[in-house]
Every structure is written in structure tokens, then in C-alpha cells.
Length: 228
Image 1 (cartoon, rainbow, N blue to C red):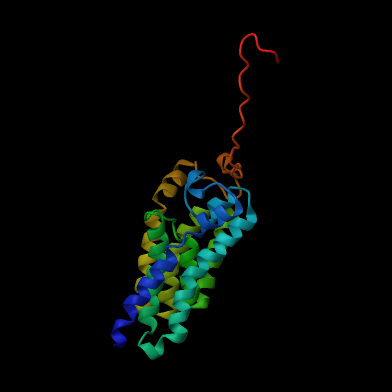
Image 2 (spheres, one colour; image 1 turned 90 degrees about the horizontal axis):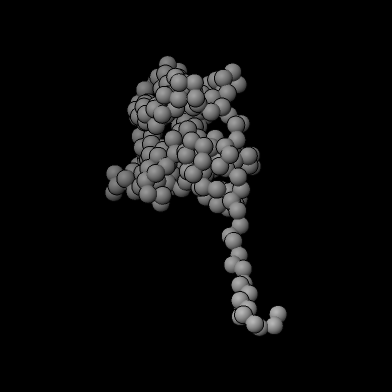
């Protein structure tokens, strides 16, 4: 019976990962859909282009949390049900895939940077911190979120292999890194062309969503010869 639990755990993790918090937070904050401006990516960086820093911060935190929580729960409470490091790696990958192809949003999701960071923190806090530090260093020097994400994605598997060794986590991290690079293929083209947007640049289409228009009552037209 214990061999049965990893599969439903992965399904639940995928469903949690499918929550696109960029879209959800933007709706709550009264902002335009992040898929309609900037890069079109439903992620924290694109929400930041709306100029709403609090919404971007909330998106970043929640996207990371949905990657961290399934892994953490399995590692801390999964042992009695036969779930260990292998299942933790599986549910982390499932949550990440859910972000990329969310079932609630017609399988059109984001690039998964924050969610991957949450998964790494869940697998090993030091691995997550080392990868996040790499991202921050590249952003500080170059101001490109996409470039920082690509560099961090390349370094994460090497950090894991060189410092903590292989295992199921190494496979999951390797797959996430490959998917992250693939999801950034258009960003790579823009980086090479010198047209990639830097962090903090506001998209003109990202203004606060306008309130619904009210229908004006039309005055009845006066007939000819009628007194006003």
C-alpha cells in the first residue's frame, strides 16, 4: 500500500503548482492580466512591470511557496507512508511542471523560476540559497532577470552534484534546469539581439485595469415642434 502514495502525492503537487499566482494576485489587486503585457509571462518579474511592487512580491513569495511546500511536507511527514527523498524529488518536479503547464489556465503557464527556487529550498536549504545567491549576483550586475535565471539554472545541478552528490534530487533538478533553459529560449534570442527588457522597466500596457464602464441613460429625443 505504501508504494501507492507517491503517485497521488505527485498529482496533488501538480495541482498546487497549477495555481498561477501572477494571474490570481493581479486580479485581486485590480491589475491587468500579466499575460497581456510585457513578456506575457505570468510571473513575478512581469507583474513588477505593472509598477505594483507589492503584487510582484506576493507573486514571488506564493510561487516559491507552492514549490517548497509539497517537498517539505513529504520530507517531514512522508516517512510513515513510505515517501522519502525520491518522492520529495518527484513532487517538487510535479509542482514545477504544474507551474509551466497549469491545468486551471489551459496549460499556459510561466517559466517557473520562483517555483524552482522553492523546490530547491525544500530539497536542501543550502542548495536553494546558493542558487538564489547566484541569481541575485547576476541581477545586481546586469539587471536582466532572464539572464540571471539562465545562469542559476545551469549552476544549480552542479552545486547539487559537487557538494551534496547525486540521487533522485539530482535527476529532478537536472530536468527542471533543462526545462527552465527551454522556457527562456525567446529571452535568449532577445538577449543576443540586445532587445531584452531590464528589471524595473514598466510596460506601458500594464496600467491598473480600468473600472467597468457605466451605461449612460439616454435622454429621449425631442420631436419636431415640441416644446423643450
